[in-house]
Length: 321
Image (tube, rainbow, N blue to C red; front, side):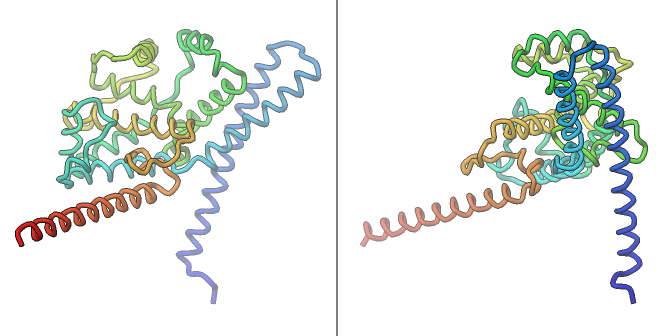
């Protein structure tokens, strides 16, 4: 008798095939990246052995980065979208404003739209969000974006540029692949690179003329709008969903993504006092620790209120006796 069932064997066999397919995909993506880097190095002319050593070291760093995007960046986008779906749906059944008010939307009206979104509507939006993610090709950087990068001395180093290029290649290869999609294979480190273009698809779909309130957002908005509709075509809102509700949905998802990446960069420690919804989507344990912290805070708060009520009752009893 085999130590496992036929079903278990089939699942194990399928997992092996999927793993081999993933490895084959990574190898082909890295090969494409290596070819582009070789062409770039050749165009740079003779650099001697020192330059060759530098390029070899850079090649290894870029290869390691590209592989880590697939192997190490968890949770994956698909999981985060499902967690966000659960978060939005849960808000509609929670009556307490203290539990549902979020700092990740622009206005109270948008928050109301999200809080009143039922499970069916949230699911419809989640499907549209995933569709936008999995069909967005990151376009070749235009002249305006290159000028912006050239003016940013802090991040304008060779390694950063090549890692960014590696992310672009891996992402676009997945979009073009019929069997694997970015949302199944990649995580937030890749999504943060593609998100401005994904969001621009959505913005064009609702034809939003809303003005940005800060210089950084205004400049980013102008750069994205400079791309042709052929490169970044509009993605219409989900059928049956109000425009404002859809805008609120994908805007908050993007804000939570940015918050998670900022936490990564700042190596921010857990804040015991403030709730961070981005951890419900993007933490390694998929929000388990964050939910436990929230439960502990509520329990402690209830204990304090109960003790306060008991103290007041005792004082009232003593004053009337």
